[in-house]
Length: 276
Ligand code: X90
Image (cartoon, rainbow, N blue to C red; front, side):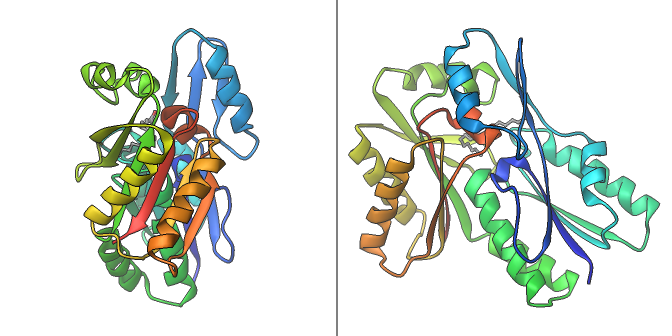
């Protein structure tokens, strides 16, 4: 069967083995430059530019047309977007779904609002890939991925909420409270797909311990983990070690965030998607 998986660039994935895949870029803009979050973007260069830039910066989600182009002419489309709680990407994908199915009544699109971002989206996509490759029907895949989504979570650790606050994605008061130098926050994607701060944490080791503590508190017990880091491989590896000490058989993968997640998680940020 002719399946394609489409995701906006918040999933930090550029390609996928064995199943057709298209990434639809979000954009990051300053008053002087636009960064398109596609395979050509040098994320470290962008982070370095932004650290020197003192003006305003913002992001923009894809439009309906960009999603339609990414659907191509596939019979069955699975589309995974960043949380509708913080972005218009899901609405654009739903608009594209409507248009695509009006123009081609024999085709089907299933859009998934991840209520999350980064590595949790990547987990959903990995599961979709497995289900497609195992030859399941569309209805069965929809049922199984919906159930799987009930068992995935996102926890993150950020050193700054500056870009999130400046773009209205977290209240300025919350950002100010956590903005004291040397304090990192550990948070989670809430049930509604918004940013929920769990605690403030001081020092890199304490931060890693707090991530693992909260993963276990949310029900993690040795399932699959994806760690995405904003140019902070050292902490990602240390976190992997900590999880592996507790759960030696856990499958833990590490990747770097692409443009959108790097912009909002900011340099050093860690995002952890896991199964419960
Ligand atoms: O439409 C747009 O312009 C995109 C807006 C995205 C805003 C949030 C991105 C968050 C990226 C930061 C920490 C994780 C928070 C997750 C809460 C669900 C990563």
